[in-house]
Amino acid sequence: MSEYELRLAPDSGEDAEEQLRSLLHWLREDENLGPGVRGTLRSTAPPGAEDMGAGLDLVALIAGSALSSGSLVFSVLEWRAGRRRAPALVVRRGRVEVRIPADGAVDAEELRRIVAALGEDDGRTREPEGDDGTA
Image (cartoon, rainbow, N blue to C red; front, side, top):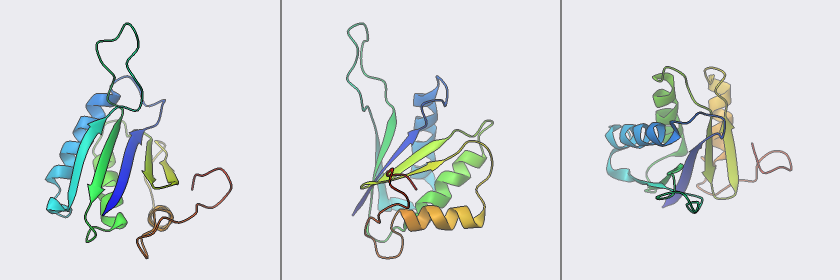
């Protein structure tokens, strides 16, 4: 089993929870992913004193061993391409965090880099390039 977290970048706007709900629905309906992926919406921060509850700000996914990182990333990119304004995303698997910028399409080389960073080849988390924990 592999665990992934998908978050919108902090500057993605105020409808982050709605966009994450849309993304989770998309992933659940994707025939290429099938029943091999289970996901939930979660909060990374406790609610403030004035809030009625914490805002949901990430999609936590558990994927079966048969699901490749490439299939998941491709599905996420398809969802992004269908948005009026594609949000910047952060995908995390283990200690590796990959940013997908909002500024346009991801080409084939960029897709290969993202998949490699998330440990596609052997199922293990790889150390990212660079020292800052991002790929």
